[in-house]
Image: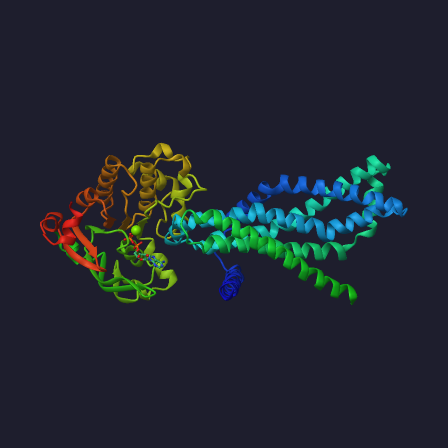
Length: 254
Length: 249
Ligand SMILES: Nc1ncnc2c1ncn2[C@@H]1O[C@H](COP(=O)(O)OP(=O)(O)O)[C@@H](O)[C@H]1O
Ligand SMILES: [Mg+2]
């Protein structure tokens, strides 16, 4: 038990150090723009279809599930507002972040871990390239840029799914549905959600990189590293989400 | 021998190197001189600290005590910038080749050139890549990925990536490990050819007797953390000490 606690604090400390190193080094050249672009493209390419499909299904399911209750209360005209707020504030960011923790975070963890055990990271170092800048800074920055973008895309697709259900089942036109959504949603819904998505992206990137970059267990450790990266990143997504909701709540009260 | 060659400083000069990990001393009093243009083979059992030794030489591991001078520079005192400059003159071939999986052979070879442009000013990247690849006889593999190469080809490509910077000193970590004896011999001969072509000094870490015989002008046996014996291959082979003898049976 004491060992578990000690390990927990040790790991937390090391991750904080790793995070601090990112923020110390990200400002200074050399900047690896080409690698950054490559990673952004890679992340987008890897998760676009999955995030889109999941978002679409979430929109449909959420609408189908809540429809009967809303009808019972004669409140079906509130559907766009309710689904819009649920998706934009909560479901879009969290689901997208979880999917990316599984897909992107594990990928980064496995990639860096295998580069570490096969000495590719050392090889970079002796070729005059700072591997932290080339591998870690680019990947973390890329997840930080791409996760919010994917969240916005997922939001839109979810709403399309929801609108489709309302269109088929309730005869509501797409224009009417989206004008209702826009009527109820404003920037105080969107901005906090984008901001927390940045944090989700950062967490996914930094955990994947930390786990991979510091792994030392030989080839059989690569799979485990990827697995641990997913678990920790997913947990962090929930913790960050909780903090974000608390903070946003304080702002609303003001 | 002309007077210029006499004045060349030693490529590597190590005196009483001490290096420990925690309480585990790996190198205890290691000394080695490698003259410019000389080929030294270092043999030792697995886990005897061979990889640690050459990682110290290139500054991937820090040393605890002793003198370590590489190409006239004392490695422990170098700033990161100076260390980078020194590394531009030192080639390092890793044990498992360490080719970048996500990059083609061409991109692998171009990688060291990205940051060391001052040294290679006026030379075209394409020409350098072609030259290095033809030195190892694999020009046709230029657009392949590492996963499409055989073990022997990987070692050759890694060698090409090592020599693309035209190093003055090349460090090889078990260049023939994991290869069949025939391919191993080919690689060993290639190392000798490369050394002649580039007039570089080299240290070849190995536990392959054939490789040590082909590549080394000198043979050092690393045991108990120090240079246990040292001499030409035949001199060392003639020693009857049991530790030395175990390498030759
Ligand atoms: N980063 C490290 N941390 C702790 N111990 C290490 C490290 N690198 C090497 N060692 C230890 O140093 C010893 C020599 O390792 P190494 O030089 O890789 O052996 P080899 O001669 O087979 O190349 C081994 O006992 C190994 O456990
Ligand atoms: Mg070794």
